[in-house]
Every structure is written in C-alpha cells, then in structure tokens.
Length: 459
Image 1: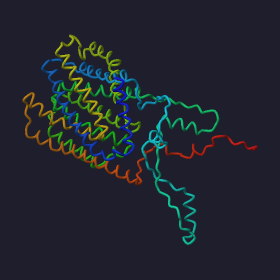
Image 2: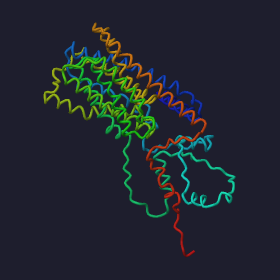
Image 3: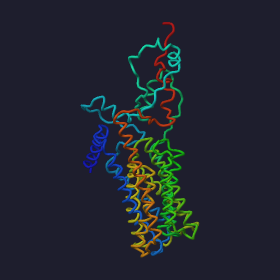
Image 4: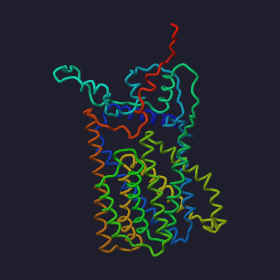
C-alpha cells in the first residue's frame, strides 16, 4: 500500500513537471471535450439516481428525504481514508512542509518554477514627471531613443505562505508591528463554505421528489445556470465569468426550452424546494470555482471528507430534532431492502458522481457545468418512458432542441476563449490578466524601497 501511494505521488510530480514544461500545452481541446464527456456521464447517473429515489419514496413508501441525504453525506467521510492509509500528502494548505535534505541535480529555474505562479501581464504606467519633461522639449531637440521599453511587464507571484515570509524578510531591522495573522486552514474553509451549502441543496432536492415528478424537479433545477450567471457577474473577479450578452442569450435559450418542457407541479411545496435547491447549488458551484482559481486546485478528497465529517457531527443531532418535531419521523427503522437501496444510491449517485462533477467543473467552467444540468430533462423524460411507461409528447421533444443548443454553445464559447488565452500566452503577447483590484500591484514601491537597516547620521 505504501508503494502504491509513493507511486501515485511521483506520478503527480511527473504530471506537474509536464504541465510546467509546456509539453501538455496543446491539451486544452481534449480537456474541454473530456470535461463535457464527464458531465454527460454524471447527468445520466443523476437521472438514474433520481428514479431510484422516486422508487424508494413512492413505491416502497420510504418518505424520509432527510435520512437519505444524511446517509449519502456521511458516506463522503470515506475520502479521508486516503490520508489514513497513505499518510499526509502535500496539499494546498497553510501548513509548512519540511523534509530531509537530499542531494538532487536541480537548477534554480526548476526551483522558481516550483515556487512562482504562472506569468501574468499588466500595463506599465509611465510617471507623469517624465511625460511632462518630454512634452516640454521641442520636437527638434528630442533625441531618438535607442532603447525601447515594453508597455507591459511580466509578473510572477509567490504563494501566500512564501510571500508573507518574504515580505517580513524585506522589512527593516526594528521591532515587528503587531499584526493579526489569523488565517483559516483549508478544512475550516470547507466546513464554513461548502458543507452547509451542499447538504442544504441535497436535502431540498430529495424533498422536492416527494411532491413533483423527476422531470419537473430537474427542469426547475436547471435554473441554477441563471443564478450562476448572476453570481459570476456580481462577485467573480475573473474575466471568463463576467457577464456577456452571448452568455445571457444562451441562458435565455436554455430557459425557453425549460418553459416548453415544464409541467409545473400543482403543489407549490415541491416547486419552492426545487428552487431553493437550485439557488443553493449555484452558490456552492460559484464559490468552488472562485476559490479554486484564487488558491489553486482544491483538494477534493479533503473537501468531500470534511463534508462527511460535518454530516456526522452536525447533522446527527438534527436527526433527533426532525424526529421530535414531527417533520420526519425516523421510526420504525428501515428494513434491509430500504437500507441497501439508500446505501447503493448514496455511493453511486452521490459520492462517485459528485466527485466526477466537480472534477469536470475544473476542466470546463461553472457556466457549462450548470447549463449541463438541463441535459437531465430529456434524460429524465427518457427514463420515465423506460421505467414508468410515461412517454413524452411532441412539445417535450421540441424542448430538447434549445436545451442541447445552449449546452453546445456554452462549450464552444469556453473552448474558443481557452484557445485565445493559450495562443497569446505562447507568443508572449501582452495580456492584462491581473485580477481586478489585486492589492499585490498597489503601492509597489512602499515595501521595496524601504531601507533594511536604519542609517546612522553621525557616520
């Protein structure tokens, strides 16, 4: 087992060196296509899982959505077995990793590639006094410049844990200022941001299946693409997530297909629960995308493991609360058939599919992953016809056309944007990709020009 873990570790290191060396620079097309392929597989698994849940709630009369969500979320704790078996691995946490010194033939450039981030370009602002001085001279007196400076400068940043120590090393030798350096670790961030959102989105989706059909619930859940577009336009600092009229048109095309296929439930409870699930899932997906771009690739094993521990610690007392309040009686206990259905549905329909879903989101973007949710509508119509002999009518078949068109259009937009960015980066053309409002580029001279040692005027 140790050998397998070590082999996996060196395989990851080799993969990282391939990425840094540019040997896999042409893989953006395959990355997008593979992400779209994973999204289609995950949507198929989700539709089958929803049909199994409907069978559990309606046919077996096991009407306990909170219990089913609790079992599914607790299963996520199995992702922590990786750390128990293989030991602690290097991750994107704030902890310092120390190892025994060894003699390796590595150059300084390899060390810089390990520590520095990818290249970013920002415009160079010419000082106003130089501009006024040049403008004051006559054109005849101006000398032809022999050196031409670029209007853009390349910026490579250190990781947060290294940049903070480098800043302290550049400060002058005097008593350090009192600073509050209270930074949350990765597990704490996952508990605060992801775990409550995931559990609330899952339990409301499971509860909506009690009152509405699978196709109606999936139709309402497709509105999360509109919420993701809204959150990206308001809160995301990245250019690819910004609002564009083309993206808005794709969302409208998506909602047009949703309006055709929709058969709203006569019970408002199911509609409200489905809208709540779509809203919280859009927040969950947007926060995941922004955090992964800000702090690097998120450790998904740790993320899902923390969600499982959150369910064991926080949601276990809630089981007694919903039982005592009468919202969902937990007695009698489920029989063997019901428990096996819940367990298998949780492993395949939640643990495996959600892991692949977030991985596909990293390969594409949040808009594609949310619009791909609309694929569950024609899939659920086919599943209803296959398992429940409920065949769709002509209007429902016509609605699949704009839904598929919006999904393919979003995939093509993301692919063309990635190709433009990669082409410009290869040619080293100036591209202002620095984050909006990044404090790293403000007051750049304040710390760099500060003296390291106080000068004695008596000398």
